[in-house]
Length: 167
Image 1 (cartoon, one colour):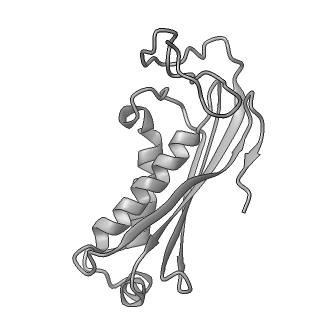
Image 2 (cartoon, one colour):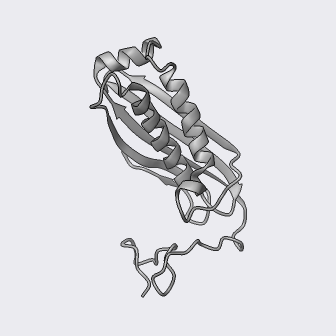
């Protein structure tokens, strides 16, 4: 029996009519420009944030390493998420902003492709891995670091059109 999504009763695209997981056939979909933006936060103490900002973390450049890790992760999303299509990404940016008010870092990834399917999972994967990398780089100083709020901010292109999270 096919499962239904909660919104509008639309069928889940990765479940076939017998309820089995499947990779969606996108061969008939037109290649269009698609962009996705995702965001997450890494919360820590002020002292740990100061260590990152000053560049004095024991393992080296925390933000630079996390940025590269996020970019690499976006490119390898189909190897990590079982039903994602491998995509020839045209752009991946990972921006990490230290925020003293938050006492942490805001991680934002933007991913772009011209193809038959979107890049939401690539943007979310980039943010997730960048956040995990920040944790890995500072865990010796502070184990209580929290990764929070990883979510899609915006999606542009494709059949479903433009989506932007309401704040």
